Image (cartoon, rainbow, N blue to C red):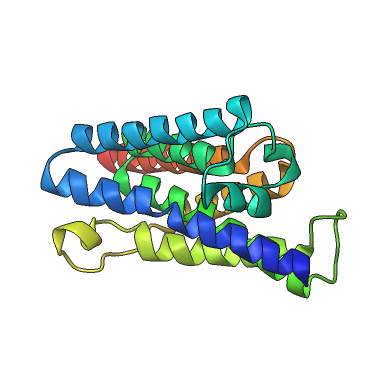
Length: 217
């Protein structure tokens, strides 16, 4: 039960990372895309400086030190934390991919990973490895499908006020599958960076192919 509570605490911190996405959308809609990316880059620099104090200097900053000690994994003790890789992945996605693809990839990273960890640890019965339960994998895939259904449509309905739009199922399925596979196969590299990059890249390629094939009709 303690491990479940600890994992839940880690995922709550990951939810706070969604503030990066909210800040981007607010700033880009108020000013422009480039200024929003500059602000996220500034936030990334701040995070790296805090990590420098933690890792290189060994500083014990009030409040932050307690969070560092309580919720970090062992592999993060002397290396960059997941929130740094998450923000790097978010910046790359928002800079390179279609906004629908980028937002979906970022949300899949947060909520898909959360579903895999919490459902797998709490309800796991079929264990593929010591840390990987089939129930967790299935939960992540379902959550990723739901995220794709809500976000990846033929319009930016959540920004431009248009109709809800028609879901683009080929992109939804391939992104959900990619995110789930990366989460399931990667253990030593940081999935906070790999999931948005891989799922976003594959989704963008499929989107471009669909546009290309449509132009031929």
